[in-house]
Length: 256
Image (cartoon, rainbow, N blue to C red):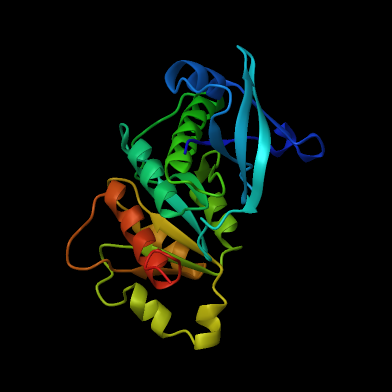
């Protein structure tokens, strides 16, 4: 069943009506060639799903009636924020797509000391963030997410540190850490502390890794450097590797 995200303001339960607008209208009519009577899934991005029937399709919008309303069960019990050092080329596209599929909540692009990519101005940054948000949207549709992960505007390292203070725990895969892994960090927590973890931050450096001063700053702010094993992973691999581990240990990737 095809899935679409809409703004909650486009849902009128009093009139049993949902209106789809924007780029999805063309996709529905020209690409998917849906017609009146077809059933689709609508998600408001707030963990609510609506099984809906197409009532009419025009150039401007698609009108649907609600057949069934239910709470989404697609979201993991733990929220995860990715602080990603901005990589070169289209690597960020792949990162955003895969972490969205795996259950990320927020993606924070971070300009770090060894970030190679340079942006001309805030307008240039906004265009890039808009593109990344669209990639997350498409991945959220495909993986039937109950929320749409937020791709934040670019942060500098200090701002990202401040943002991460709201997380219960923050981890930083670092090539010079060869003793403590994710399991070690969990092992030092009591059963109560472990069960109370509701939000985790993952810190990933750009292609050149973290600058030593950045690691020192992170440690000062209770971010734990960890090892991912004897092999060095690329920046576009490390994020969804540690996210997979988190979802297996604390989320729902391993099943019930």
